Image: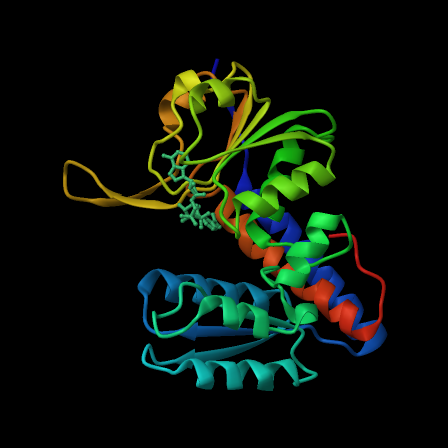
Amino acid sequence: MTARLIDGKGAAAELRAKVAGEVRRLVAAHGLTPGLAVVLVGDNPASAAYVASKKKMSAQSGMLSFDHRLPGSVSEAELLALIAKLNGDPSIHGILVQLPLPPQIDANKVIEAVDPNKDVDGFHPLNAGRLLLGLPSLAPCTPLGCIKLARIVHPSLVGLEAVVVGRSNIVGKPLAQLLIGQNATVTVAHSKTRDIPMVCRRADLVVAAAGRAGLVRRDWIKPGATVIDVGINRVTDEGGRHRIVGDVAFAEVREVAGAITPVPGGVGPMTIACLLANTVKAACLSAGLPQPEL
Ligand code: NAD
């Protein structure tokens, strides 16, 4: 058996087209153009590439995009002052501070400084709490993307056995909450879990978000299960070439899974599309308009 490939690129393009349609509607009906501010501190090349891609995609969907680049030496106070300014700017509906931040800056303080209604990354404790309680919230983009990809294969996740490998605040934990919200039965496995292969083998849906290249092996997967690979790991092959691989040993797992996301071209593009969707939702929130179905 060879698993079906879940086309993250295609699904992301579809979602971006929906977002663009919603932006046109908001402009025409309410004179409201959603605006996204992206803050990049320092010159980490991976962060710069993500930011460039977010900026390009937001402009393509008809939103306004505001770029703020600060030197890696910027003080915490200067960054917090910029966030306060963006919080107070009515043309900005979404604020994203690209992580990681340099060591002189407390990332938690920065996350808490963002107005929760403009927190399109869904990292603010208020949004995390609302997600936990099942209240309307801005939820983190990568987990939202994972849910949308899983639902291509399983239109309903009700009763599904789901295992999330990884318990970070930005992927594993919020994903577990979203899956519970979809009525899946959720297990969170992590670096201290005993016998992870056994835990994963009972899953209908495995989401790997550990940041360990090729961690998930063929014998971890129940035949026919769906595998979503969040990992982005840079590895060097024997020829000295750099490649990006996921947390799943793709070639061998593909032989046993029912469906699988590729890396690249799976979760990554969906993350950015969900960021745009969150920005439209935040714009509606600010204007007291109903949330669009995105
Ligand atoms: P993180 O380092 O904050 O968390 C990793 C989690 O995995 C931890 O909870 C840890 O307990 C667990 N873990 C580590 N080693 C493990 C092991 N051997 N077995 C089981 N669990 C283990 O990472 P993160 O920020 O959650 O990101 C995870 C991966 O997803 C990274 O590769 C990251 O680059 C990628 N990522 C991708 C996107 C995207 O858009 N595709 C977005 C965010 C993160």
